[in-house]
Image (cartoon, each protein chain N blue to C red):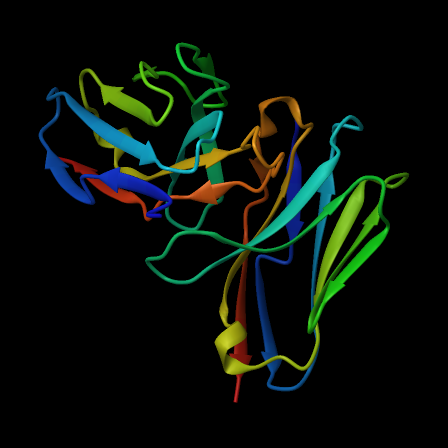
Length: 112
Length: 115
């Protein structure tokens, strides 16, 4: 089955700096790659996603890039703010039943 | 439009007891899922369903059973709870044939402690 690895497990950045989280996946059939943000005690919330026919997608301060050949994708957060502090999860899906395989998560701390 | 609703939100069980977690969605979604999340870890798929009357195993199905008798409901059962099943359980749903949207929406979670 699919295996998704996520790095780093923790990331501390100064407010205003950029944060980058990287994920690799194993199943070349995976074609959907969402990113979720989870605040303490809350449900995962979708923040951005990308499909395999697109190399990059941007939404205001967040962007995701996908390299299908290398089987990795990354989340970029620019101009970080304290409210960006949370755990971020990447995931991959082959589309069959939309089953998601999650990475282990990255705890992001934005220091004011 | 409540989205995905889980009950109960919190439960403490004794080892060997049984219980059922209920998930309900009002988005006419075809697919439903149960994930568990252990401290400091990502979510792992327990079971899922691609339509009313269907269920399938995910990554970590042992010790759990599920049923999807109605399209809007997906039940997760623990027949004989074990301390290793202490976790946060998230239900999710996706795919409406009306809109072809594939976004996966999560419920608020159910905190289960087995003592």
